[in-house]
Image 1 (cartoon, rainbow, N blue to C red):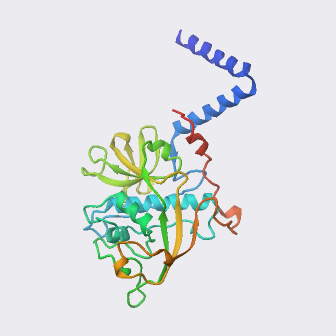
Image 2: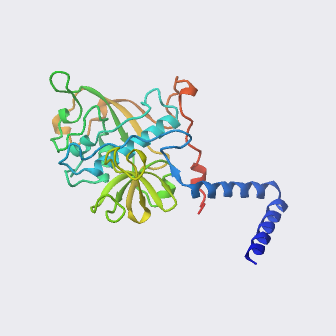
Image 3: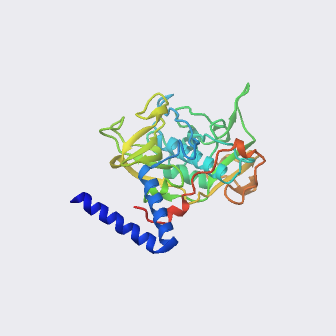
Length: 312
């Protein structure tokens, strides 16, 4: 009887689509593809046959500073930079992938501390004064004073503050109310609740890079040698994923060049705008790249139109 009802419903549906002409048929095909895509989930480690995310790092090596919030923010921002740059063909001025410095967030973000701090503080710093990449300031496992030398340093022979370096920033950020929908645009930084099925009993932060059914795929930066997914990634049940932070669609990301040293008094207040030049958005206004099309990965699937339709 159930099978008979299913056949009748399917036949009635086909009659409705086909009887309504091309428009009904196209709407039906679109909604079916939409439901199929969301049902299969999203994974930015393999989207459009390209890995858009940075590799997990080890936030506990060296030990002594619990700053998962800084690593989560750095991973999420770095991945969003990759998506923005490659999707807009801005590879002329953006590197293909960038690993942002968690240490700079610990040193200079407001109210930052080992064992404390928040993703909000890191994103606020990125919006205010910008973030630097890990070659400027590698992970040291302790909080240092926010000075030019503890922001970007060159240690060839003696260690000296760098005069000119690239700053990566965001124009705005906010709470991701619907994490699955927000993942269409890129990874998000979330607080993960510790407990059963999680490698620690304490809450921590991670960059969530995708989902499958009721499980979210995350990079907690515990090292590539750990994880219940390959390469240091974990899958956590949705019940463990708490508040998430993200960038607005399509991702207001900026790139600027810092020239000259900024005064120590401006360390926490942010760099003066006069010291930033070569500013542009990493979106449609970016200059075209001279890189061959074959050497670039294809842009991610055009899911923004799906984001405006309730596909649940």
